[in-house]
Length: 401
Ligand code: ARG
Image 1 (cartoon, rainbow, N blue to C red):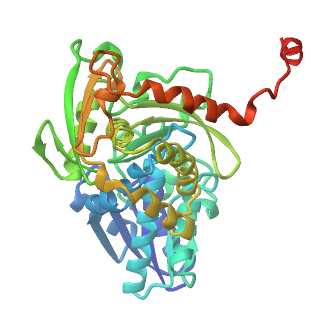
Image 2 (image 1 turned 180 degrees about the horizontal axis):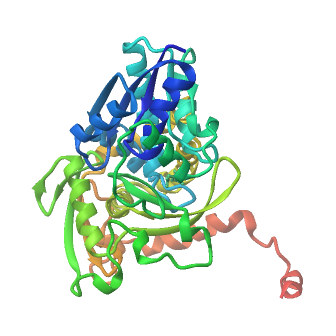
């Protein structure tokens, strides 16, 4: 191993990893940091990486790419793992894998590395992604290899080697954050019976501190993509940022989930995803308005599968690509406006409209304006029930009761 590209966050683990890889494998280490959440201090990040022994650092703002190529397809697929987790972290990993490979190839490195632990899903997502894109690259996962038994040992190691680490007190939780959501685990959350304490939340307010009056917002969609908020045109990324802030103020998007990890463990995970919660609801509702029953029902089945593929790290795979095409097929119709109410922890759709709407008041109404042909209903039921006519004897039916 000569040259390694490491996915670098600037935290204690990846900072120690720089030095550890250099010393253990006698290799040059190049760091790569992707901004898909808050943009942190570039200078400080570069300074930290250098102090740990990196020869070079790539710092790239990839939020627009993340939104366009990762969040958008997940939104179209209504992807929520086990019906709950909007997959923020899981969507970020293939993006990181893709760029690790790109930089490794550009730098003629023979290896990539990451700071994921050995019992999570993220190692799978990064490593399967890297292998799919370039199987020649070796992969190092220092956290699976090194012998540090505790955080204190890591801190001692950093001090001994003059590695710059943040002075801020370590949170009692393990957190991963990007624009599609925050994942929070460990600490007291490991007790599945305990209610999460307020200090476990970072972007959503508790109900005791949300505004008393609800807030109405309208979200405009064009070709399946949210393009405006309250009539004001906005980039996808700005809209997500804005909804995270607004939703967070109203306590929208808290999720408490016992989830089934790919590596076999059940884990208790908290998520905060105000924008993802709001946009999923809005997009689903608009699709409900413009698509027919059979499409909508079948789509749910595929959404489930799609969410699994993302969670399982199978992003760069044929089934995933094929499903993307399925979900993309009718997005042109998903154009219109959704009106929502943010109210004490809830986001509720209260109105919807679209030039492609299939909803017909004349057919739905119970008033005198009704145009539904009731006389046709009788024949419909005779035919619909024909295969079953007389199938169950009265005696049998009585027995069942
Ligand atoms: N359980 C989630 C997943 O597998 C989130 C993991 C994020 N990591 C963290 N340090 N909280 O996608």
